[in-house]
Image 1 (cartoon, rainbow, N blue to C red):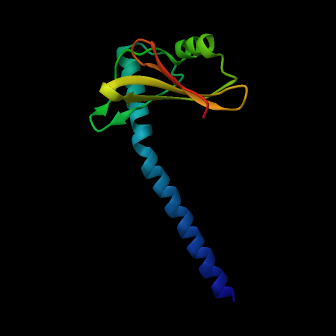
Image 2: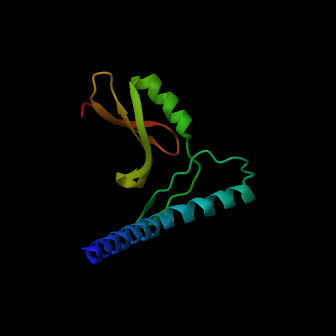
Image 3: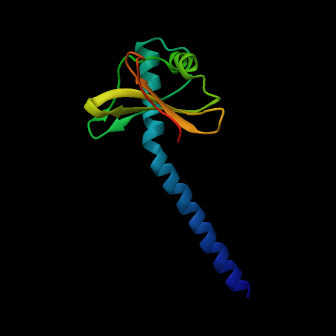
Length: 131
């Protein structure tokens, strides 16, 4: 019985170690890109303090350019649709290779929606509402 418990303990420990290694391996490109981008910004753009990091990558590579800030999109969104709660922000690309801010929000009635605006200009593109 003691050998069985030791065997089970060994297998569970191996599984946990394997899962930790898999997570670290999967997250490594994100953290590497974050460190690389932060170091680049400190060197070339006099970055003092990093607040957020967004990484979007598709089959054509990562996207880098002047963008409208998350705060500006939030202010515009509050003025336009007054959401009850903002759930998260994502960068992405939609048809015709337009880079976007996609903001997921919740309305006061509990329904979900997406507010989509240009990443480069901040111009509202569309709202998907009532989900």
